[in-house]
Length: 393
Image (cartoon, rainbow, N blue to C red; front, side, top):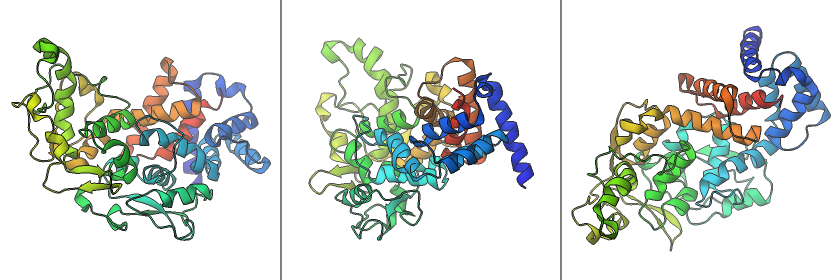
């Protein structure tokens, strides 16, 4: 078994070497190991770890070296926290506190849970009673996660950060059918389901998990039947502006944004709200702007992006429509774009630059393909392969 694994890693290493040209060859194993550790963890390795990683690299097993680096607790408390934190707030700031959204990302990577679960599954990560000093998880505040953060709890330890179901959390009001990974966490709701029209929730998902915002997804050919009543059809008195500009965003966006029609964040109680079968009033506000527009009646969604200019996103799901945030998350997380976006973001984090040039783009594409294989979606493996690719720079 070990020989088979070593041969497989050797083949992958050879491919990565070919992709990188002479970069890896020029740097010695010890230098490569230090660079890999610094980029994955952000701090120098111990002498023991450095020597062990260098031996693995010299033996043609750089992926194993990367996994050894990721055993360091700082990979979870710093690297992964910084990686996921911008996804949790509208300012895309890294300088925010740990919350249930961020902790769930960290736990999913640590445990090699398929990363696409983040958009659809009944899943969350919380601190154990011992790790959080018995400060329980709450639907109305973030004190539980602040306790973990302030006490520098080792999040790499499964005894400290524990996988649970959202439906099992104290005070939960969501049925299992309404859970959708991190998009139904308190952290996500506070940032993207509060006030507004819930379009921000869809934009947050596409921006952070498809690397595409609404401007990138413009489609002037999409059908306008789901454009809501709050969108004027003649801005400034000119209907051409709607048909040539506003429509290109709203047609596709509003057709999908109905998935969050039953969700809200209560600013008074500071918790996520779910009203099964009852559309949130925010979806029907400013109905007089264009009363012949679409009035949301349920949480159905339809994906007009499957055809036309956005078909390049690589839609691999089985349905082009559905109801609720869970099924929409499944639709988005099975795209090729989802896979490539995750690799691209890891590349920028670990390689300190955006992918550019033929070799980089080929590496991203191949890592994304392996990420998708057998629906494994191992984000930890993406970090390891990306660190291997960049360790000779």
